[in-house]
Image (cartoon, rainbow, N blue to C red; front, side):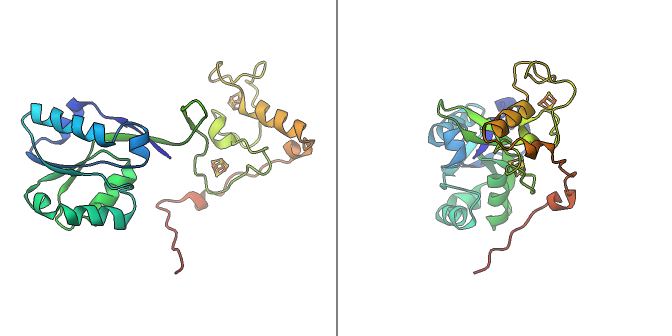
Length: 217
Ligand code: SF4
Ligand code: SF4
């Protein structure tokens, strides 16, 4: 899931300068789970904007605004309010905000209410933990299922570096060195020979942006 955090109301008001009539868009998936763009946050944002003399003409919450048919359907349902609006304030990740822009026929301004921080899994305690940097060339098969690109502070493909001390990372002594974790995992699986294989530098052509995947019908 995509992790987002709220921007301050001061920052949002600054971005909304010059726009009086606002339409809010939330997200029923990741931003609802992060408590940054669900129903309570939409209502809270409406009240805050009204306190600052903005007019909120409407709001919608597609389950996933990053999916075109969902946001299109919500925008179509709210066309009357949208025709009078000047700007969208989007309480979703950057993907959701840009999907609103791509699917808006009226050309309203797009203002993000959230910062998009990272992609994460949710652990058993409900914490969000970054696990993958979407590098385009997965090496989990040779690293015991532990991602060095994300979990090593230097993103090293061959490690550990010389700064590792008693299993801890030199960049953050509270964190386990990712390469020690990889070593332990491979040792447990009797696959330590894998750590001796030198991983070649990544082919950054594979992570050239923007990515696009055409799904055949
Ligand atoms: S190596 Fe790490 S960053 Fe790359 S795809 Fe695999 S899990 Fe993601
Ligand atoms: S100590 Fe380990 S986790 Fe930290 S930068 Fe070096 S190799 Fe990466």
